Length: 539
Image 1 (tube, rainbow, N blue to C red):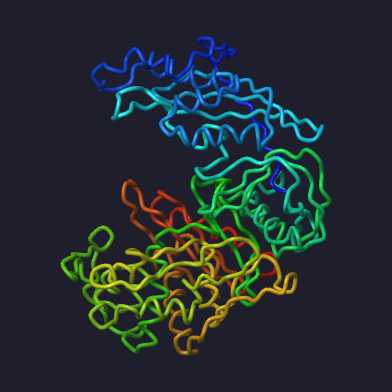
Image 2 (image 1 turned 60 degrees about the horizontal axis):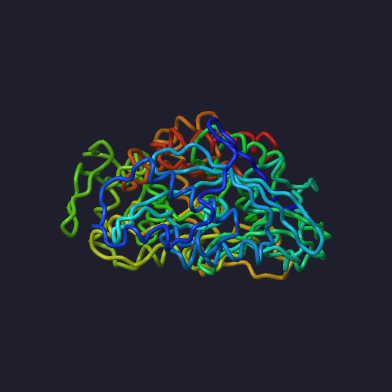
């Protein structure tokens, strides 16, 4: 079954069987004695946390929805979801086991039965709640989020049991092997997306299941939690390579918060996608500042405008002032006498930002859209994606955009596509399922770069792979290759997000390691390992 059955019991040390609390006294009776007292302030006591949690859990276990909702800080939202838990999700026989609190957080596990039209399936899972003090009346309440009911729920999501509106699918790799989360843990969101897109078109028949129905604002696909009766799955073939997908899973397993995409530049076929975290698909749907990997797009624009050539003399000052901001290079480095190629290879920021006075606010946006197909929100790869964003900005923010900061947002799929466009000279929209399967139209770029511009880009990217910040990771992969590293500063993070994108023959890969540090040291080895393996398979 695509999406899998989620039934996880987590019962840690110090957990005891849950006892019913206080005989179901009403919320009004519990609070009336303190209605006229002064508003209490300060941190919650352990007793307040424990008592509040027990009240909520006892009332929920006994089916007293109104009382349980009244113990939360958003009673209307709590009441609606708790009501739907039994009415729409058809849960019964709820038993709650409370864990040991950590501060104001209280873990607990839930055992229940999903019951629909005579079919019953047990379900066990673990989640938690957090107790907070109300600034209005000083009383402790359960801080309401949908995840209090089930950990896979985001606010706005609901649980529904019934005949699935979307039939299940079986997805296959390019060689005909079935793709499952047991074999490839990263593919959960991808398989959910394939079902959502192709379930009704692939010849399957819906079964009965408990599933998470996403809210209107969610970017994620609906998710199956429990299958009560099997439907008949349809079949969908993808472009994924079983060997490269397995390797991608292994590589992201070595780096926390890492994501990678591999594709074939000449066609746009996606060969592998993996994320260290198996929830949200950062590789396809992430929206992150790409840092210096964006300098590929910036350089394309500069070359096309005849503002610079790779071997032209171009300094990279230690600091550069633009619209009231002072920009610094990494480690306050500088290149007093050097070429643009050297600045690209060293990823020296101010060698790019100091072109800002010669550019209009929309130049980078236009370049990204017209040559690289980015930011148009029209990619149709077969599952949900974020297609990059390069907004028109002015002043210092425009300068920051030139080095992949400011308002620029990308993910590994986008940056793999950027390197692929350099490799072939033409944008080929990435895809996971062939367009012929459902007749969808793939996105196209409105123009291609000139052969001169392509040659210049390949020159600076090869220099980076040979002698620049990508040299360590790309060692031994030459000569038909090119690469670019990136580091993107994020407020509140001690270390930047590390980016790396590279091509080798008719293969390209891009990755990011969030809060990992410099791209050459973090994402670089992941990308290089996949390119080396792919080249060994014949490219």
